[in-house]
Image 1 (cartoon, one colour):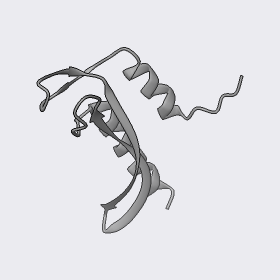
Image 2 (tube, rainbow, N blue to C red):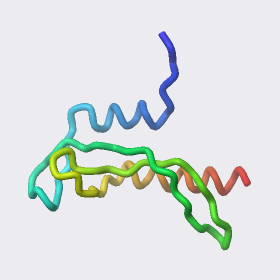
Image 3 (tube, rainbow, N blue to C red):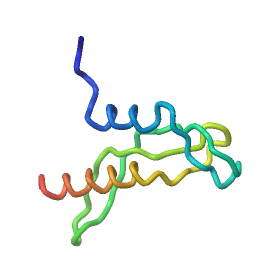
Image 4 (cartoon, rainbow, N blue to C red):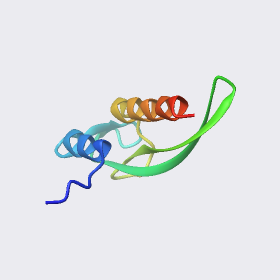
Length: 84
C-alpha cells in the first residue's frame, strides 16, 4: 500500500469524512469541499508563496470558515518563513 497521502490529506480526510460545517448562505450544515490554492502572504516584510487549502460549501459553493483549514494554512505560512 502506498503511503502517498500528505499529512494534511490524512487530517482532512479524518476531519471531513463524516462531519459537516454550517454554511451561512444555506443556513444549514453541509458537506465541505476543499480546494488546493496557491497563496501569497506577507510576513515580517517578506512575501511567501505556499500551497494551502480553502473550504467551500458543498451545496452553494460559498466560502466557509473552517478553523482546522485556517490553522493548517497558518502553519504552512510559518513553515515557508522558517525555510527561507
